[in-house]
Length: 318
Ligand SMILES: Cc1cc2nc3c(=O)[nH]c(=O)nc-3n(C[C@H](O)[C@H](O)[C@H](O)COP(=O)(O)O)c2cc1C
Image (cartoon, rainbow, N blue to C red):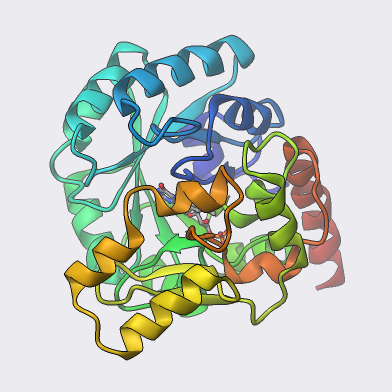
């Protein structure tokens, strides 16, 4: 398939990234994606107990990934995590090739990470954020549309109009995220100006993901209208709609619940309850609108290979 700046920058065969996923993106999943030619990504709290230590957990996950793959992999750093400075020290100490920063200001850590040889990709959801990331010197941006699972940007911009506007504004390579589950989405993203794609929802429903089977099955069963954005007041997040959790949250929002009331209802680790424990009624089951394109649980490597194989077929059809 087409060589892009992203493949070259990250040293990977195919410009396909598995997105960071708070409690779920562990070393096993990341290594499977990296071994298939994409870029696997570890999240600091993957597989961790609710009261665990993300720094200790990440150190163990990085070492495990290094034992499972010789290929580059990344670490996702939500910049609003209390210990994110310590997590960055770990990335540097372990010479992790790629850091994916999100939910915070890219100007704080980019230079430090790059000084240790780590490439920095920053997640953005608007043109303004892309400009800030470019001025911070990041190596590439991950532009995430409102179709994506989990946290969305406050302006809820759809990928189809977001990518070309970013391509018109910054010179950085762009990775498209949100709503992409197959090679049609990948070709479309490239046509809009992206040079790589990042998938989250598709990589939950794979055998190597530590997500609970009930959650994977719910993604496979979900159709086009089965996700919803909740929590707009705090941080807009896309998850499965027909769960008690989402319905209660929507009811609270309709009744103008305060931010404190919403926080209290969510509690700590709401997405862990759904994602790892399979308690879809009492947890937040993050899910992107592309779940309607996910019809079976596959191996992570199969997902990568299907994207690559289908790419040529889509181009031929066009
Ligand atoms: C269960 C789950 C948890 C996620 N947690 C994070 C996270 O901690 N940090 C982050 O940058 N993105 C997170 N994401 C977003 C993904 O990295 C990715 O950008 C997004 O899922 C792409 O959209 P898609 O779900 O439509 O493929 C999460 C996605 C899922 C499915």
